[in-house]
Image 1: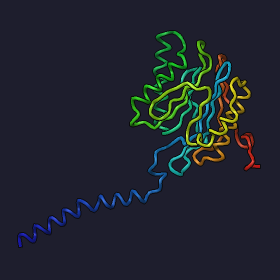
Image 2: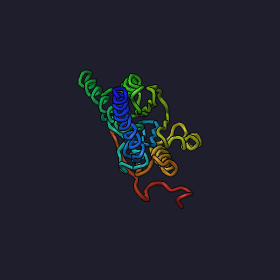
Image 3: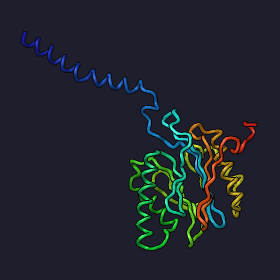
Length: 243
């Protein structure tokens, strides 16, 4: 009888130990993805150099799984008065990285009494993304103007590599754009041509990529500062499937 009571108590303890865990796991699987997925900027981002500055652009959709958490996100984030970054990946990660870089570059400006170069900003992004590559989901384009090298675009993809490019695209929507970029990019494009090029690229990705959408945000950075543009509704370029 003593042995029977022991086995009974062990069975009760075992069921108490394992049943709640199984129940919690089943409950977790039953939740919709938008309750469990982190906020992601989904994203299409693009940047291009021209003689005298750069043009950058992005869509404005933020998603959590299949749920659209924000339709009008601003993914063109100011780092200094002459340098911006385009963010793709985890919204929390990219916002945190941009804030930290902004903090470092403000100290740089105070110590040196001059604006930091675009290369310095890109190097700071690279160091943060590389040193924390196992815990960050951040793909970033760093673009801006400085008096030494003019307009520059640097790409810092997942993993923390960096390289300067005359034109760069990123985010989930970029996979739809490589053919467009190869066919339409020409060295020596003027400011207005670059604005049209980036606007068309973002619009094409919005039409194809489910994680990109909303409005098209553009910015032109030169020695005179930053000009911002927003294309909404019928201002967004139309293509054959929309006609």
